[in-house]
Image 1: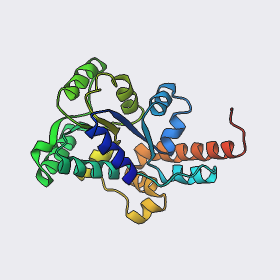
Image 2 (image 1 turned 90 degrees about the horizontal axis):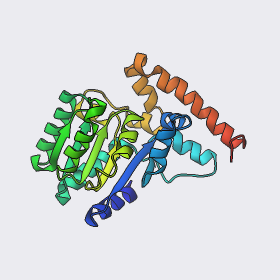
Image 3 (image 1 turned 30 degrees about the vertical axis):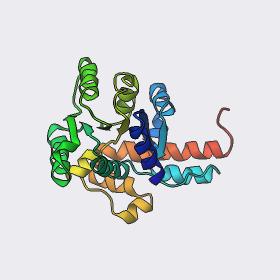
Image 4 (image 1 turned 90 degrees about the vertical axis):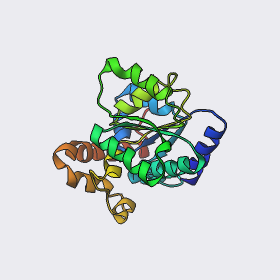
Length: 233
């Protein structure tokens, strides 16, 4: 976490651009068939393991990672950094009332000057370029995109050139829902035990059952397949 924050700060100070992405078990499974998603993730500048399952799998495969870097925790730390350093952020995603609540919350907690702009995550393909231009001309140093995978990764990769003025770009999934208070995050002990997925599943079983139960099973299969050397070189 500290290393990532340090790299982001250095990137902004040097007026460069950093494209960040997080991966979890579900996204790793999606990447096996979604070529565009795989390309988007693999071409990012920093890839952090958001899911505890990925950290465990990496250790099991003798390629250990330093630690889990949860996207929502990284976002919260970076927003605080933005406030301290005078950077500006753009929030893109979720429903209008949700993203507005996040904007109001950060404006009250820090300062309204922190917010370069915001937009909900509901749009048509014809609106994509206009949105990218809106973000690019907002003066934002950091962009947080709360849209589901693979839509957000593919969008950010597709419009990377248009967003070159934004120093840091990051997809944050359902983080706006949590920050706004719409949904609750799992207790710390469940996060550390790798059970955060189960907590989210218990909140929205009809929507999440396939993503977690089927997705997690496929991930375990892929890990053992790798361990036993059955993957293509």
